[in-house]
Image 1 (spheres, one colour):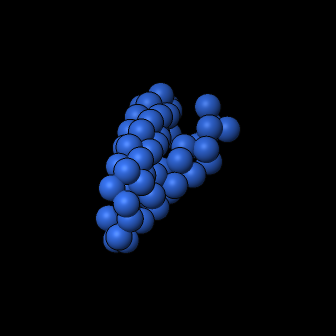
Image 2: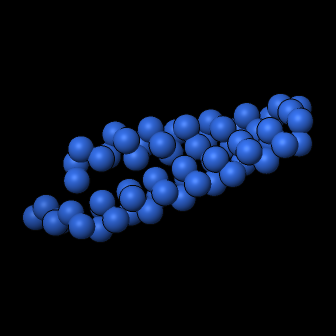
Length: 61
């Protein structure tokens, strides 16, 4: 599962970047919605994956 952490973090960063681009620039409405949907999918997937990854780790004593 540790191999997936860089992928999940990069998905989160790409999702945040596309959300910031869609919110801060003047784009056609169709492209704006596409970026928002991509950001939503990437952010939700990476957040759930990171939460599951942290939840399955054994606490270090």
